Length: 269
Image (cartoon, rainbow, N blue to C red):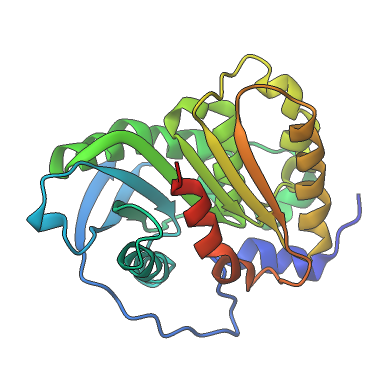
């Protein structure tokens, strides 16, 4: 299948909603950081943790929002500041944000593929399973040990990170309770996840699980986000889901354009 190479380059190379020609001056919020030597990804992972303003004055346990692309020079400041605003406006409950800084982004956020076109841009795909194991077996226990957490967990990601979010909801739905994906790269591996969604999820129980996702005007994105919507409409598996078709947004604008409504919908009971 022929794809628009320019769009694909933007999709793959963009680490978040910020493209190489756009500069945002997001203030870096007060936060904690820690490092984990991962036996699953075989590298040192830098983790950034933001807690809400009243965290130290209450005894409440909180839901944790995990985020790939979570470095200080990535989307951590952007999302932490957004959470801070929404919490102060009483639009969402208190949550903890855990940002995972990238090391080998394309490796960690993609599943396996033998498609020649994919390999041109992602020469070492297939690290998503090990990245999930890192989150599940190393990161989550460390966060639970150091912070007051409930058993509720969420994950948010855009582009390749959005692909990882959707793939995780399909392959390991019990890892998180809430899934948020902006412009997920569902074209990857000849849209394997979309084409096989029903078969891949037929034994999954999604009761009390929520999925929010959005697609921009980029044809190689919206084609498959729209197809996934049709799949979801035809399946009764207990999943609560919402799709936002955003034809007026571009790949490098959709994260910031939809973040508030995604978080509000996700954390509303």
